[in-house]
Image (cartoon, rainbow, N blue to C red; front, side, top):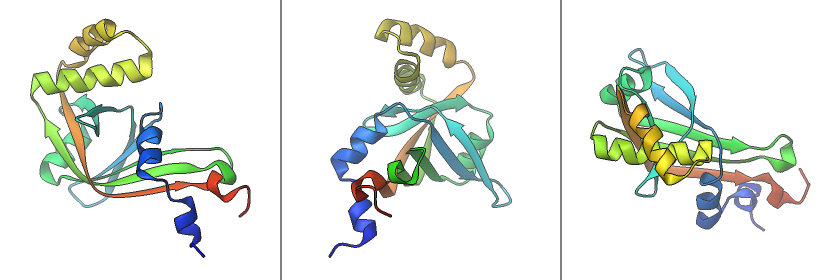
Length: 153
């Protein structure tokens, strides 16, 4: 009989579909004193990997330049039997290349603002000022979908 952990684990296809829903991602990086810096971010994708753009001088970028370890959480559900989530542990790559930054900013704008690609490109141009991109390179992925338990605990 499979363990409860195995029962709620998402397949690779389910993880991919879940990540492409419109969610908010909690991003955790290490501060200089090894405490956790945790923030919520909208995200897009770059070459299939979750990515986001943020101010170059933000704490998360400073942290990642010093220590690239990152953990992110994307989750939803308002009752136990509906909880779903994906935790990604890996490395955050800070990118200052404007072409890549424009691509990532465009995917974020399109996902969360529901605009056309042309409108997203125009908005991405504005977002690029004083900003960097972060691409998440997963090393470990943990997932859960409690709806697979069929309402049991």
